[in-house]
Length: 386
Image 1 (tube, rainbow, N blue to C red):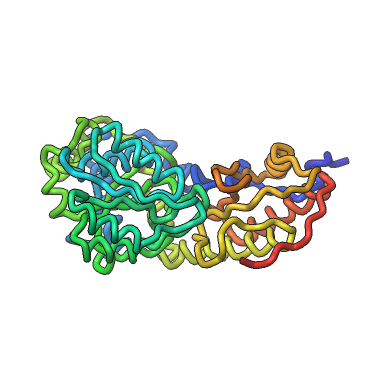
Image 2: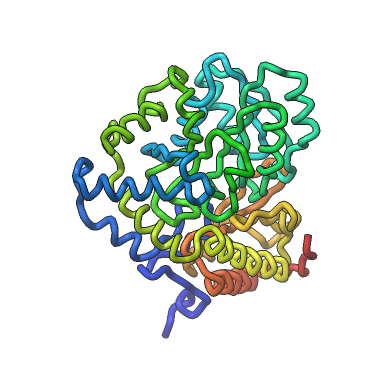
């Protein structure tokens, strides 16, 4: 006789692991995992050529060939963001940080630790920046040299108006630095039409690689102007780039297996159709997930106009039988790992739409949610579209 878990809606990845419905790390393909079973020498010509392929391909995603270069940074995405901020902002510079979530707050903290002067424009986690107010701040504060913005703030899943922010910065003569950690590769970012000095991202988000390598795609001319800015040796993007450009090698030991897996992940990314294909699959995942959750009675935090197809935030039901930890554990038993909330504006939880997930997985997750609610004795009225 099957166990209760076996008889319920359940799913696993192609390697038998639970599906990660999170903003990262993510469910990866079997081929990406298999790429890591071999050992490579970091100074071997084969690895150097493979790494160069990875770095050369990334500016193409933003239509920045020639004008932009990729500087990799060992570590998580935050290492890349910190490297970007502390390399591009001069020691006497000042940054206007646009905050509507945890990653804007983290950037502010990075700048504070590095001794950079900061100004803040903060809105609630479900609210995009007020660009009129931002323009007034830039007009009133000529000492601001840079603006920092998050493309998709995964605290809530909100899509910030990066094109309008870039246009504003260009009009006011300020340099723009972007954290596109959860957007790069799935949401369009057109460098010729969206002026910025640098954008930070990671191998393990929309590229469906594994954690351990961040990167910054830098405007070549702007990177050349950063001499003497860096406050640390290991996070100095200019120094990293010069060594790679001269020798093809990292200054310090690179995460070899992560880079080889990233190379495989990028091959799969291009085979899927690049940003259009990858972003299209995620958008379909999000459409199915959000519509299905609303039909089960869950309210979304964000209206559809502000929702990026990366991760969706749902308000925690007020039903007395709903206990989030039980809800989480039951979904995990069925092979679906979701994410707790990270908001101050609402009690919530999050479900991701990215990684090696397809519409069939989202439908399976919805069936698992339905069964879990039934087990918990939670009956909710369908929620309206937002």
